[in-house]
Image (spheres, rainbow, N blue to C red):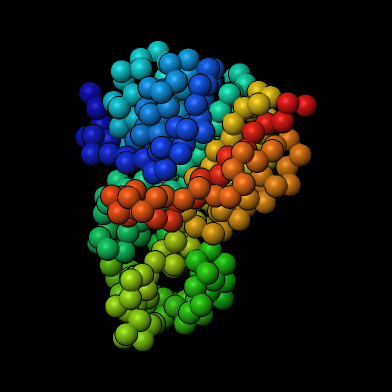
Length: 294
C-alpha cells in the first residue's frame, strides 16, 4: 500500500527536454542521486529502454511516491534509502543525475517546515527521521555564528540584523512557534517597501537554514568528488542546481576535474515557455560533463 504522504508527492521535473536530449541512447545503469517523486527517472527510463535505474533518496515520502510512479518499469528499478553522499555503487554507471532542488511537495507540505508561506514546524530536514532541525540549529548557534551562516549560505546582506532579531525573539519568547513566526521576524528587518517585493524577505534566510540543516554544500562537494569514479568511460554526469552557491561548485568541478570533460559549455536554463508553465524552473541550471575515455 502506498504511503499516503507519498501519494501526494507529485514531482514536475524541470529541464526535462534538454535532459532527454543529452541523456539519449543510453544502455546500462543510471544512478539518480535525488530520486524525489521519480519524474526525471521515469522520463529517462521510458526514452531509453536499455537503462536500469538505481534511485537514491533519504526522504521516505519521496521513495513511496517514486515506487508508485516507477512501478511500470518493474525490475528495471531499484530504490535505495540513502543520502547520495554515502552511496557506493555496485557496478559502473553510464549516467549519474543529481537534481539539487527541493521538491515541490517538500515545499508545499507545511509539516516539513521548508516554506515561509505555510505555517509549520521549524524542521527543514530532507530526512525527517534524523539530524538537527532548523529550530534546534537556531537555538544552538550564537548571534555571530547565526549571522555568518545566513550571510554565507543565503547571501543575505541584512544577516547581522536578522540574527540579532532572531536571538532577541528567542530571549523574550523562548522559541519560535513555527515557520510563520520566524518569517514575520525576518520581514520586520526590512523597510516596509522592501517587504512587498517580488522575493519574500525570508527567502534567503530560509535557504541558508535549509542548506545548513542538510549540509547541502558538503554533500554536493562529496558527490562531485565521488561521482566521476562511478562512471564508465564516456559516461555522463548531469547536475541541476537552483542557486549560485551550488552552480559555482558544479561549474568549478567540471572545469577542474581531470576525469571529466564538459558536454555543456554554459548552463542550460528553462525556456520562456517552461518558466511560464513551471515557475520553479526559472532558477534551474543544468550542467553536464562526460567521463574521459582515458
